[in-house]
Length: 284
Image (tube, rainbow, N blue to C red):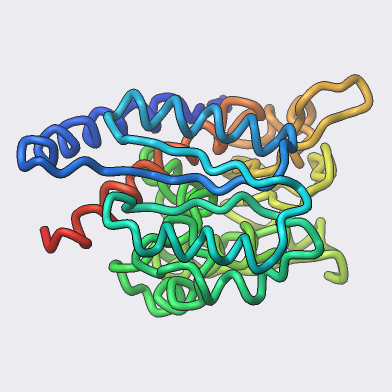
């Protein structure tokens, strides 16, 4: 019998622990703070912002949103970023991506303070993730995937895991994080031959390919664990994942829904990283 594994219990458990950690920090007159830099008003950015602000408020983390106009110059963007780097009251900086085409992310990633980079934009944090250095900040969504697997006692060590997708947003980072957990990881992408056959032999399938309901039941072996990272809008204007949920759920032993799965854990990971950054900056 399959089990639908939801993100809310994972997020709630994390929040309970973080609330206590923040209370201890505040008893020492230390107030963790996140600043979000958002360019324009993209609906997906606003949706994530709402969730992040709500989660931070629940935990007791202070927040600030810096909204910049769509036509903000590269120079002004970097100037604002440097201001936040130098602000001792700001512990974490989250830059919503993708940035407009006229702002070079290749420049921005070297400007953000690695100590405040809570979603792994800086190459320094990417390097720490590769090395398994726990002082860094891996991306929030891939970290949420690992957190869900651990919460539901899914054995990762030595397991054959297939990651569908190779982006720097989810695919590559989640593969690295799982390697650090001693999994055997195969990364598949648009040029992979017999991708369904490779995927169907996996103990755990992680879909981060960015195509609504792309992963059919032939991609999933009997009793596999399936984690759906995709967020897509279908022809009926409804949210769906990369997994064809209705056709796969009876074949998988465990499966995450969309919505209600990985996405709901991501904001808790963000909050965890802010608290971690605050502690490290205060030598705690």
